[in-house]
Length: 483
Ligand SMILES: Cc1ncc(COP(=O)(O)O)c(C=O)c1O
Image 1: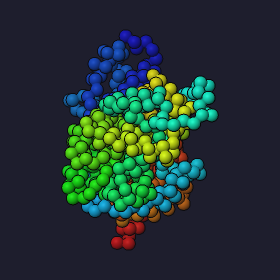
Image 2: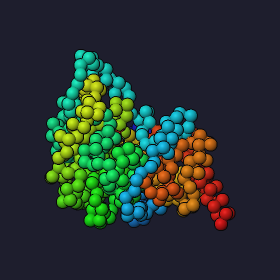
Image 3: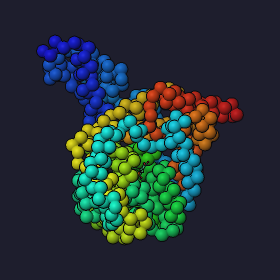
Image 4: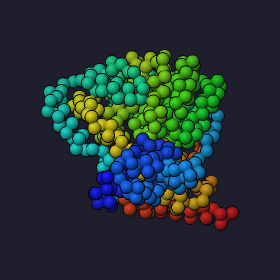
């Protein structure tokens, strides 16, 4: 028996060996874990050691005992109701969100504020040293490129690395079709420019990322928001109806961990979505930025993997997983590839080869998957904790999403609380939240807020989150007092 080691170390080791895969989503909620005796046998430790480890995991709300059934991976505590499927108007709308979004984003990056405004992992979650070494190597080996013009689709080694990366999402992409861009948002902008003209209607999730709305605003496109469920993404029946009744020119979607609502379209619906757009000849612009953050394998498979006709334009970047500062994205625009390349060349040309080489180097490193897992595990624990604080400190009637990965929570506050007022009240206490109005062309989400939990997370931030709840509570009470 291995129990010769100090018992307190052993039970912590056993607990950690289960906590890590639970937080990373390798062991999924509701899954049965070994019984105390089974685990004791397989780990060669005493029953008492396993019991102690399970007690720690229960205290951390990671596992739960069910009478006469054993131990299971727990649902995230505590259970709060989730928002319901959104119900946007059936007509398309012009967009006007950019001034509010610009203000919030400016404040969200100001170090003087406790910020839940932005949606990006903080610098400490990236392996900066690894990135620095890759950039140094690239400078050493490719410095000649600094004084040369580069043209075309992007560095070949990076395009090959991106095609390999796409295999993880079930996509067979020819490296020759990959175009390297400055960011995922540049990829999306180019796709929209390639397939639309001013005045055209674009279908998207509701709520959706404010940056998408800003792009629509800049390109004078109209938004048609599609009812979206916080778990399963937009309703394909509603999308079908929209196809039948409106002249939709493109669909823009984040099928995995959409921002801000965190939804992921079920696998069968991904296949159906690929078929629907192919039948109608409508391009689907698929943003796969968060696929590596998904808890489950199924969620990672891109809609593009079901595309047999070239109607899915797949866009990504490594801003959230490797390093936001590298500023590189990519796109394979399917049947619109040639048009997109012409637009890219006449807009921003190509990127800095040295940075492209550094990213290709990083993508080829064996530790890359472990890096994704590490970020996934860290943010999962944080999101659990934040949901607990929200349950305790936000007004009754608050609903919050329970995303299967990522670091973004979407909260529906009791009706009557105006999130712009809450935003202002938070600012007065040096806290930044993102008000719901930023995430829709409609006025449907005034009582909602988005919380980005990827940034710094310490006691000051825990306190700040409690304060957001208390301020919302005060607003809820004064609403009741006003009758
Ligand atoms: C869904 C989604 N796509 C794209 C982006 C931006 O990515 P990039 O920095 O590569 O443009 C974000 C950032 O918040 C996002 O949430």
